[in-house]
Image (cartoon, rainbow, N blue to C red):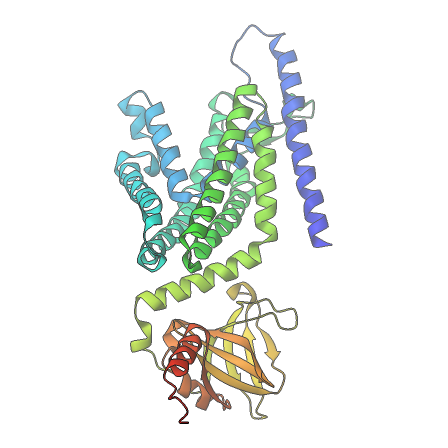
Length: 409
C-alpha cells in the first residue's frame, strides 16, 4: 500500500512540474507581448524544480565526479576574476583538479585492472568504496544546499530572492529565501542521500564480488544510469522542456527509495567488513562476555537479512537479538527459536548457524574482527560446537580426501 501511495505521489509530482512549466511559459509569453522591457520575466517556477531534481540525481550517482564536474563548469563559465572569487568551494581548481586526477586513477584501475585477479584488485575497490561514502556525506551537507540556492537565485525575478507564482494566474504568492530553504533544501538533501545510497550499494556489490567480469558489469550499469540522467537533462535543456530530465530523475529516485532499506543495510554491512578486514581488527578484538554486534544472516520473521544488532542470551537460555531499524529508530527484539546452534569458522568471516539434521543454515554473520574467536563465541552463547564453513570447509574436505591412506589388501 505504501509503495502504491508513493508511486501516486511521484506521478502527481511529475504532473505538477509539467503543469507549472507549461502554464508559466504560456502566461509569461502573454505578459511579454504586453511589455516593452525585454528579459524582465524569470524562467518558469517549474524550471528551477526540474533543474534541481536533475542536478542532484546526477551528482548523487557519482558524488565526487558530479561535484567536480559542476564545479569545473561553474569556474569555466565565470568570465572575470571577480565572478570566480564569488564561486563556492567546489568550483575552485584546488578542489576539482585533484578530484579529476583521483577519478582518472580510478578509471585506469577499472580498465587496466580487468586483467588482474580479483584479490589483487579488491584493496583498490575498498579505497574507492570509502571515497564514495565520504564524498556522499560531504556532498549531502556541503554541496546540495549551495546548489539548490544557486538554482533558486538563477531563477529568481531580476535577482530578487523570491519565487513568484503570479505568472500562473494565481494571486501573488512570494516565497522568501528562508521559506525556500525550509521547504526545498531538506527535501533535496533527502533525495540526494537516497540515490547516493543506492549508488554506494553498487560499490559494495563490486567489493564483495569475486569476479572482475561482474565488477565491470556493475560499473558499466552505474555509468549508463549516470549518462542517461545527463543526457535527459541536456535534451530537456535543448528542447526547452526541462521536465524531461526531471521525470527520468524521479523514476531513478523512486527506484532508489524502494530499495533504500536494502541499500542501507548492504552499505553498512560492507563498511563494517571493509574497515575491520583492512585494519586487522581481529588482532586487537576480544568478544564481549554478554553481548556482541553482528548481522542477521537471513530473513527471520520479516526482519530482513543484514540487519545489524546485538546478540545475547537471557536467563531462560534464549538467544535474543536486539536491533534498531536504520540504526537510530526505537529498539526491536527478536527471540530466536530453540535449537542447536554452532559457530562457523570461515576464511574471511565467521558465522552462527542453526543445525537441523545433517544441514546447517546461517543465522548470523559475524564481522571479520570475530575471526579466530569462534571457540570463545561458542562458550559465550553456550553453542553446541564449532565447524569449518565455506571455502575453509571445502579446503578441509579436499585435504582430508587426498591425505587418506590406502586400505591395505
